[in-house]
Length: 117
Length: 112
Image (cartoon, rainbow over all chains, first blue to last red; front, top):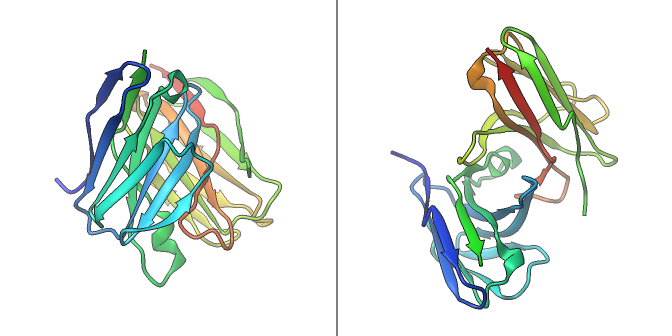
C-alpha cells in the first residue's frame, strides 16, 4: 500500500528517557512533516523537511531533533522526555512542485501515541 | 501564532440530517483545506480550496472558500453513521509555503 507509515504506534516510557519515532513515506513526496496533537486534539506543526533540508522549525524545545536520512524518511528523536511531551505525534508528507497547490495537500500517517510516566 | 476559529466545537445530529461547520480567521489565507480524523487514525484530506469563492464537492461534502479569503465552510448532506469523527479546517497563508495552520476541530456525532 502507498502510504505514510510510523513506528511505533504506541510508546510508553519513563520521564528522562530518550526515544525515537520513525516515519516513512512511499508516495514519492519531497516534503515531510512532524505534528504534535495534544489532549484537546489541537494539531500543531513542529518541523518540516524538503529533500532532506529543514524548512520549518517551530518553537520546539531542542530536546526534539528531527533527522532525515533521505527524502522518504523523517525520524523524530526526543531526549530527556518530560510529562508534557505526552501526545500523539503525526508524520505527514506532501508533494512539492512549482505550484503552491501540491505543497498544501498533506498526507498523514496513523500517529504515534507517546505516554511519558 | 495565527489561530483559526472553527465552530461549532461539537455537534450531535440524527442520521440523515445535514451538517454545516465553518472556520474564520482575522488574516487572509491563500488555501483552505478540510480534513477528517477518525479515532486512532491520522487526518485524511477531504477537500482542498485554492481560489476565493471556489465551491467544491466531494460526494456528500461541499466546501467553499470565502470571498474575503478569511473564512471557509464545510457542509455534509444526508449524514450517515460513518461520518462521525473530528473535522479540521486548515489554512495556508501567503508566503508560508508548506506550513498549515489548523483549526481546533469539530467533533461530529451521528445518531443512527
